[in-house]
Image 1 (cartoon, rainbow, N blue to C red):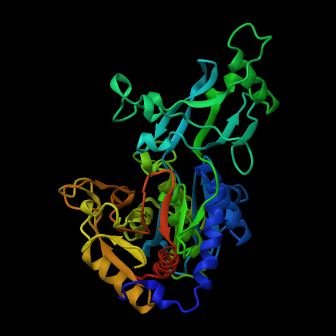
Image 2: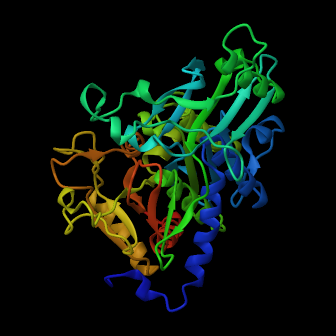
Image 3: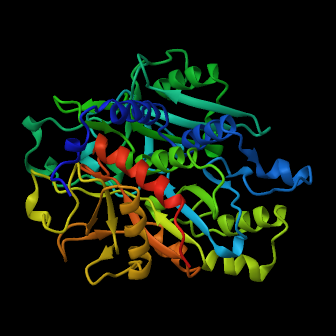
Length: 453
């Protein structure tokens, strides 16, 4: 393998063009709902049909047909039906589309010291101080009692932003000095103008009047899902523009590349699937997380429309499937090399990173991929001339991480973690290499055609 994959590209236009489209996606899709809506638009443009509509119309599926299913507007699975029976297995590229953030509480509005404030609860693993003294946007949906949905986006483009204040260094002494902030410190400043004719809570009343113009009452926050995310667009990074800095690349960089790779597949032998799910950052729990039965049920429905469903056939299908748990990994950071083993950890500009196992310490909580599966992957990638690297994530005993791999492995399928190396993982702005993004896309295209078992 060459020391730097940019050497493979005399003309870098193909890489830069692909990544410019990705950068636009990253800038415009900062929540699970927005990513799902994007995937639906891509699917429909490429001839995919919605599963529930096909079920209601009693339509049948055959080889070459394309179908997608959506779960509560926050997860989506897209299938292209193969020529082989389902029992030969499905090739699945699965990513998550949730990212660390701040969520507004069900009763977020309050007043303090002449400000209207928004109370939040952080979501996923964050360094709390990174979210202070920086511009934030609010993205989400408000659902009225009658079922009306109001899309809510504040703080993008030239719109006013919100944010969390930080203590100035001049006063960060004595009892006020904090080594770490608590979750209750992450309160967003929403406004500073008073509604003078209001009898009480004048600053809150002014903000409520602004919300009423959007059709939102204070009680509607109980049935709302509003996320505070970094405001602004993803940017080209580096004087050479070789990288991208943007919010939510864990794991939307793998979601985008897996989705775009699926759009390149025509007439597969095995059925192929791109799976984009929610809640990975908090343990894959809930109805839209990977621990739910939704994906299993969806596969059953697709098999039924193909005339191939039985409970035993479903079990065989899942057991014989192959999956790339397409999640990012940590790249060796030149500023923090003590946390890494550079000989075994991922590097920028060396292609997609395969983690044979994740977990922590003594491989606790890991899915440990089988060598037979890895050998088949190596063979396919080498045939397609797709570069890759085999890695771990940080020094042994340094820490670790997890993905949805172990959840899917419970079906007995082959699973390995495979994704883009990232700097600043879980920070507000994460960094990726454009050549790694493009080579990961190529690796996913190759994997969809893999033949094993």
